[in-house]
Structure formats: structure tokens, C-alpha cells
Length: 179
Image (cartoon, rainbow, N blue to C red):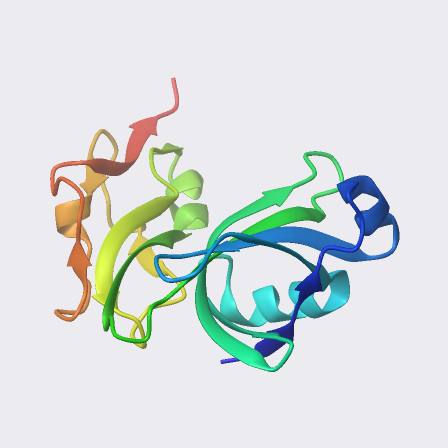
């Protein structure tokens, strides 16, 4: 797990922070009070590229290390740059956490070559798992789904160590034919 350094916010205006390549954020949790911080944009982007947008981060605040999970990343809708991050501290005494895992769809090109249209219903799945066992993503292979059929949460093959906390009949993606 990568460790990133954070500092208390020095600017009260988030636009000024971003101007100086600092991303504003907030750290919260059960055992700590909310803390507004700033982190270097390049350092944060590199870490997110390695861990994913829903992964765990180890942060260093003045020598005090916290294990956190990324709860939300806000991005500029045009430039797609990170403009804010929310982190939740994982208490040391807890072994399991609730989080959302992003879905990665594979086989999309094969479905489209066969004349199918993919309608993605979900981007993330809510799960409960050990804090050291969070997968980067959950793969959903759409290549074998016939036109007019759907792929549900119950169809996903997932480790026994991970508990899905959503209705198993929830549709993840549906395939329809072009008219």
C-alpha cells in the first residue's frame, strides 16, 4: 500500500489550492474528528492510478499514519482532473469494512460486433470484506450473454471472503439487439 503525505489546508479557497497543484480533501472516521487537508496533485494521481478509485490509502499526517479507504473522488466534468477527495479512516480494531468495488466490463467489443447494444445499469457493487482483501475491481464478462438477456449480481463470480450487500437479482448490464 502506498503512503501519501497530507497537510492541513493552508488556503480557505479550494480554487487557490488547485492553482498551486494541491487537491483539497476531507478525512473522517469513527475515532477521529473531521479534518480538512490538502495533498499534492501528482502524488495523489499516481497513487490512484496504482490503487484504483476505491482502494485503500495509507496517509501520513505529521508523522501520524492512518489507513483509509477512498469514499469519493470528485472530478472536473470537462478536464477530468481530480478536484476533491473524501477519505474514511479504517479503525485499527476493525477487520472488515463496507465499501464499493468498481465493475470492469470485458467482452464489450464482441457483443457490439454481433450487433448487440450494452446497457450498463451499475458501475459499482457494495460489498463487505476484510480490509486487507479489497479487490481493485470486479470483472463482468459480457461476451457470452445472448441478446435480450441481462447479467445480474447473482451471476458474478466473486471470492467467498467477500459478501455482496446488494439484492442478488439486481441487473448489472443488459444486452439488446439493434433495430
